[in-house]
Length: 546
Image (tube, rainbow, N blue to C red; front, side, top):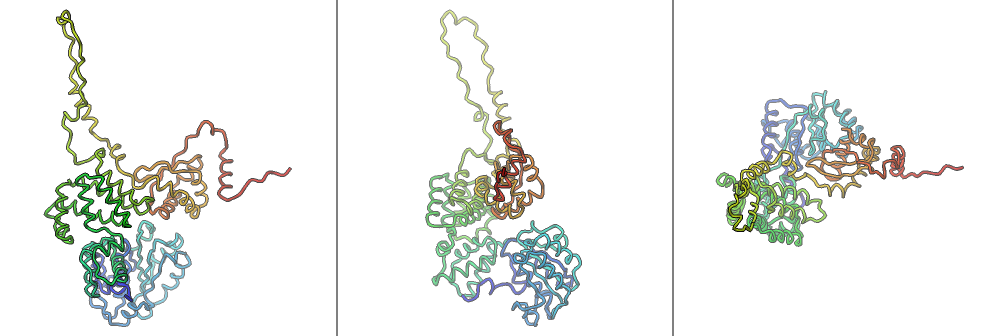
């Protein structure tokens, strides 16, 4: 296939865009009513149409014979933009133009009038990659842009864009596309390109794409270029390590029947067959979602099951009767964590195995379990003492019987059955593990050194010791290190280092290490600081010459 499918089938009209109806409607109304703004910001996951919508808007706003909001595709402006040779539409990749000098150059060019169109449109992709200086330089232009200039900023990481930039743009949030919408377009493409592919295979590709139309079209291009045969679920599974529906059903059945050995064996078999367990976990999450909807609202869930084959649909409905919605919710939470952890796990099977074991663990608290009866909640009664009595002692008045324990134990167990808010918080599984942070600690320090050398100096004498929900507790040896790490600026820099190395940004709590008795008077802070600086900078102390 000479042209990749996502380029060939990129939408050329607003009516071709799927899954982003609210954004499309706003753009169309702005064009129809002549209320075009000058600064727009599009944010959302990759492959959801940010750049496509920006180009469509630039094409429509400069079209000479626009019909309502749709470009005509016949005028010179439309041809130039489609062919990528328009001088009035400037696309900038912020990932490779991060410096302030690049934005200063842009500020000089915005003053120039359009060559042929009515507006000059600047599309800045991945705008969050700009440096602080570049953002400051861009801010002035966004505040007072020339009347003929339109800025369209696009980003996948909106939290990295300064609030000063956000406040000067009209923001639009693009969402991941539904699996059904992706599958429908892939089906249309396959029909046009005369690709022999089953509905099940198309659905598997749509699931692997995780809401990105571009990713789905790229996957279809790849599989078509590597095989000349008809494409079915097995073909997709072999090529991309995705999950066949029969494996999803099998795992769900094992969980419903509490068959732990069979569930673990299935994961082991998938791993031995070379399946991508992260992809499998994602597919199983989609399956569990359908299971949850079917269990909670059987009649209302029918539209969500239309993409399944008849036998798969019946199997799912049967499993939904064996599990409560609360049990399925717990599984969803556990496998969501497993999917995230399996991407970087040293042992790929481990996150899924942990999720399975926790799902079937009877020790875990369960919100849907019924309250124990008073008899169940009571501790075992103490047996009455056995005494041997002689005939002479039989007439002796018996000692008062022990006070029955029932009322006391009921009261005690009622109090113990209530879980305090603090206990509930401790039951919440952490969003990340201490082990993965410890493993990557050296890389995190090196990344911090690139961002801020003095901060890395303090970090080298510190260590991660505990994870509490979203917070990482870092222990350091000296108070001046603690003060250095505990500032908002330092925590922001640490967050950037974590995001670069581990792709997540925890909250931080800095604590001081309790000194041991043997090391209380061994070295002063000044001496320690000098040693650390020498270690970091590769220096050494030279004895004074006599």
